[in-house]
Length: 400
Image 1 (cartoon, rainbow, N blue to C red):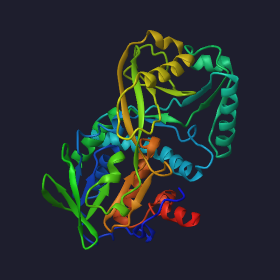
Image 2: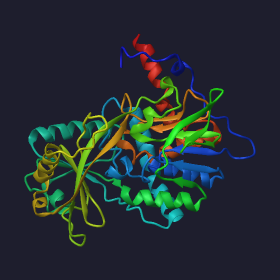
Image 3: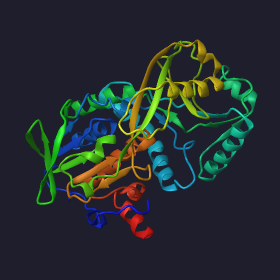
Image 4: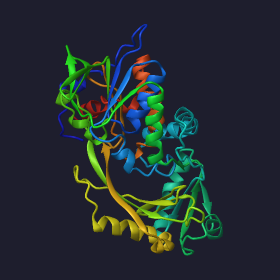
């Protein structure tokens, strides 16, 4: 990102809240997506007074729009080795995290471990798949190449002429629309406060330290403020512009079809070139997602839907008989390098949990570790260290 000046405030080493001896800190969390809810739940469980605020309904932005894939392996790309390390760590702790959420809430979250298939539609696609799989295997991702017969044995409704396929057994999924209410219930049971339709009008700064938030014209004091507002994190009033995380909205259009839950067309998550397909236990088949730089526009377009359906149909032709039950567009929070922004900020008492782009659900348990570790212990886990906000200042200084 050469040529972009980094204000002096971001050049300073970010500091986190000093762990309080004795009483647990009071925490205000901006954003009731999965990150805000889960962080609030874990802090409340640890004895912190916690209030989570959201400008709209609980969990109805990126957390609701997502597909819920936990695909650290097949999504690994060259140049993102640090991000792969964090994603892999999150993937490894997801099974235990899922059990904890279900036990704490009494609600299912649709965690499934059949693994993920990636298929190639053409010979050119097969070459790309081979390149990606070779790179991912060198990172230690467990992958298995499948013959056509092996692929159709796993998924008999796939197009028989597919050029190549690979199975990633560790890439799982969770139903994000079940996860949201489960986390909200876990938070409530732990004693946390949850406030929907309660926009944070400003963060309170007291002698340079975050001291709470203003909601409906009323000051709500806090020892720590967590910024987990997704695509809106870059514009929260009260935080100096130079200290705001560099987060933008990245639009993604998606749709859902209805399968017979007793005889679904697809049982594995499927990557098929320009689309992915995610089967749900209740019969929904999620198809996504476009990647568009359109600001805060959430219009569903004919072109977006057409491109997704065409890519999905080329791999799974039986979808042409399925009813379309929903279409939507969500806004991923993308940072300058499309990696998360975690941990302490340049404002003492302000902790960041944003910028996850396409990995928000996957990185959830690692994000919780990072933020809770910052607040209660004053340090980030090692896997999260590369994702401090001050990395952007270092990149700029290196380019000058």
